[in-house]
Image: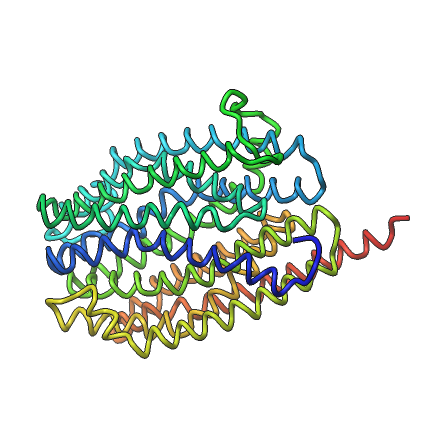
Length: 447
């Protein structure tokens, strides 16, 4: 991260993250495909209806894993091994406590939250069962996410890929077994996901325990250190709040989708899952930007930060444009993998892919800029910009433009995404240029 040619290193570092993200997404994709083929479109809608609300609940704590990764990256760049060691041993118990809390929330409030979203009567019972079982795996999920964040900050993107490969294969096998052999419907695919997450958590912890650097984990030294927790929260909490607020806007959008009925919900869920494959490929560059910028900021290599930023932005734009176009061109064929009993549901899925997947590169560019700002140690400014540009705008759109009867259509609803991506990126770009200007002047003023 700190020496040598940048572009090649960025690609080598990012590719395993892309495949890791794709495998992680396959957990949910396998759920949808199996229930779609063996249980019907209502079960697809039931699983899809849980996505936005699940993200709303867990994103706050996923943000803390980002904070842990940034602290480790800064410590490694500055060669501050004590900070790295203490951060790792604070992050793990924080992950466990976060997971236990999330399990309690999911078990207690899943059904009520689905009711508040206006989930249709023919879907809500299955959605509730799926969510409650899914949340039983939150401790394993948090441990994996915190552990993977630490490994990536240390430059290891291959290990999380290997771990999720194993977990992904197990998930597919268990999906088919629970649904086909035991006829468990959505409960079966949720249980398969929980067991797979447990495997990935065990593997990531074993990897941390076998490292030979400051990131090595010693179970007996695991305890929450106030100073390190404050640092994790300072960086990670705004990122988590940003993710949760994103999810609030998505929950409101999902509620709007729900108002069109289960057929539109089914098409929306399948299209959303297809978009997820494009998103994780782009989001990998955000994670790369966070860690490359973080280490170089710790080492005060500002010229290298500028080049990292440019390469990540250009790369994510190219990947997002290519995959977005492919997603739209083959929309019907891809949707038919998930939906086999409703041509109308496929039609509505195509509408979503047209308005969101096709211009998805704009979202990738915005996310990379957010990652650059977080790598520089800024977390409040990207949070505020995103809250206003993404959440605020989309909510305003839904309660103004979308309320007009002539504009009360899925196409108009989805149009809010593209506008919000562009506005947010431009505001973040201004923030980045100002931050780099201040850092450069400060460095030049030092003897």
